[in-house]
Length: 627
Image (cartoon, rainbow, N blue to C red; front, side, top):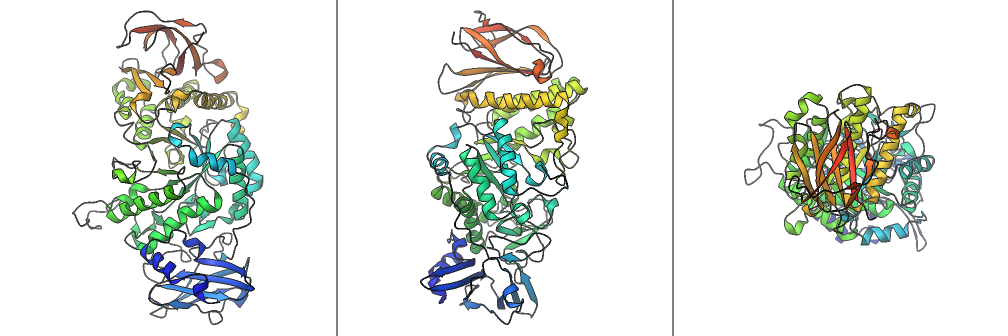
């Protein structure tokens, strides 16, 4: 077979320019069975080497049997073997110019051996019979900004395990996880990285196979089945994606020809290599990878890990270990340009996609379109809200009045980006304590405080993300090598807390006021922001319909008030529609059971007001009654 019949010189030219956006259809290993021609085609980019061979079970791992052909000075090597090698293991044997020999996994491999083995496997992704066409159609025509988004973040290997400690398969996992997510009223599942990685303890964030669905949980069709079933049930699927850095393991991308090829330098904090965004071939590799997960696995979005580490040249570096850009600044201009192109290409192909940046600084316009000089993501994690809120929630009750601004400061920038509020895995590891154990006070107060945190989480502007275990009151930190402590649900307070999270999620989805106007001031109004002495917040969340709004009061102290006045925007009869202090949730049952009639008493700038009961450490939500 002539190489040009499958991979043209024009396509290689685009790859070298950083503009081959579906490189996975040409690079890697591909089964050819058309026009009477049958065999397996291989293509790999390995610049500046003497020779490259394909080695595997089919040739006794001998480099002499299947040497590859060099395509000019492009760095691309190709080979056609006239055999159908489906399922066969292989690697590339690379001979550097100095004579050193390297065995490397295929950067474009679709499937790999189960760790600790490291070979790539010839695999065909076509043939899965998708049944999610209705979901795909709706997701591409309906913008996500005005829809509810409650993300359940999952580390698959530690959500549940078999009795002997082994992992479940994707297919056996699907029904249990999907049933649970539906019962708990989440809208999306976010999976921590499912790309192939050698070390379980990296949680998937140190990748060797960017195109390879990890073999820990089954084969690629099993993952397709998982996504397909989620979509049929109305649940979106988001993948964590790690384009900033990659693992140093010898079979991976690092020093691919004996010298830096994909990488620029080392990441001091994570012990990995940083991608070199000044190389256009890296653009082709990574942008193709993003599109690959959308095309072949029908995912709904990518949560892009470590965006800050890519944007700043001095990220986690000593002052003498980095060089300023051409303007003397610390911004990584090549990474900025890469992200803009990445998002333009993704949204060009998948207009309804979610591209969510984990960006922890005040970099402007992260979630603004590129034509407005933004980076082009459509959402950004609100790390400021998360850090301030968790810091406040860990304070002793006596200290809270002195730090009231930690609760209110986020509203000064809440609409500067399209935010997702993250209570993620990073907040419940490395000695940070579980969410429940962060709360001060006795056993009852800890649960009341956690219910309050979730009330503020739901009420505050922004889409929502909760890491698994946070919804059952996990008492100890997350452990990647053991399943969640599901036995806690045998205890009354944990079960009641789980019921609380489910009902709060259900309320969030039912009330448009919480999500329809999430990204500008038309959806939020303070009723009482500065009550630091009593540590109380009161605010209004508004839907597009001016008569559709809710009033949220949150009491962050263990004090109860029998008669407390709050301002409201409209005259009428109000009803308490939710109260975290109900006995069914483990509270003291200090509720407002009767309808509440407004008084024409001006309060905190509002023409009308109500007198209500305020329970201790509680979130109470009111709505104008339509009686």
